Image 1 (spheres, rainbow, N blue to C red):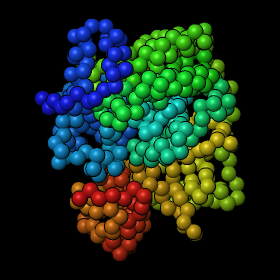
Image 2 (cartoon, helix red, strand yellow; image 1 turned 60 degrees about the vertical axis):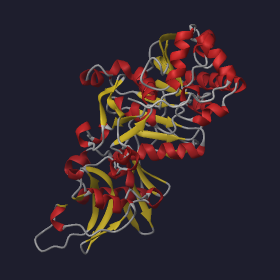
Image 3 (tube, one colour; image 1 turned 90 degrees about the vertical axis):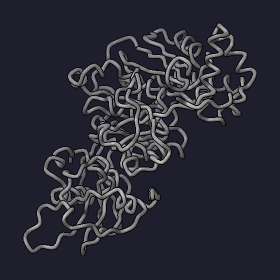
Image 4 (cartoon, rainbow, N blue to C red; image 1 turned 30 degrees about the vertical axis):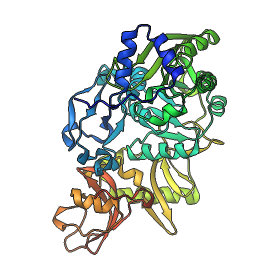
Length: 474
């Protein structure tokens, strides 16, 4: 039973419009009562990491979120703090507003009937155009068929960096993170994507009970400004959608000018577009916050994938080839045979002072502002190469030649950046001959999933958890 709280001081112009839009007084009363209740929160289990509900030490509801079977409403006690747990830092789950999970499910809904249907669909090129902070990117990554390309973009640099961090934390390996305008992307990727999600910036009415600041920032003028901006974003996205493709436009607002009227105007501008489905969530009707989504389809037949973009040339020579070969030699000694087979040497390349593996079907990114061109494999420090933090986040204990699964207290110490002296009997060490002293790169795991790296020598684990991510969980 949720505790009731006072109705937030809603703007009069908003109340007047909602009384008209909801048509009857009883519906409006139920809507206003729902806004007086605490917001709902949910936890999405990260299936990319091989995690199940039983692996999580939190109090979750018995029923999943109705539109996402991998997500559960949080019933956690305050002392459980799921956002301050090592499993959160390791990417075992993502904390997300329940209604915000719906747009990705709508975009990919035809692929979720069964695993067999997903595999038979083939690889897809998917764009999350307004992606920060990354919740819907996570949704999409978990739904995509193997071998697909996921491009995530955010126009604001600071938010784009948060997006990139969440892509890394959640172990999304086949994704690009860009920091570009929709117009520049449209000029480069005409008719390139099979599916596009446009979670457009909006007036935020649906977040009123979750975010009080959204109430103070609301005005009729802001609704009009948002609608004008959304139209431009939507038109740019449509240019990038392949014939026969699917696009979902979504907002977290109830304003008709940003929702139904926006789509009606779009359809009048684009005769090759059809409205396939439309959803609108109100907190008095569904267990979640406010959200709107429209599924649009484009007439025509998709062009052959090879004709839609020029792929980059990943052939390497000289110093760059030597660095790639150096990583592969490290992988031979440090990673399991199974995990090494998941790497693609023909897509490994240098990007600045780092080594990456490009996603399948990666397009030419020349001239674009790229934050993450795929899976970060290694980085360079003077004369040495070290495994990247992101690599640990797609691994489990058995994927590394040397690994240690830390206790909850030990992992908290590790995440603070401190060194550790683990019990040697708990160390998993392969390829060590009798009498040889173990030393080298160790995969740090938490409940079996990778959380970072350490350097093992003299019985000590020298911490390599990134300084910018270190935090206290104790």
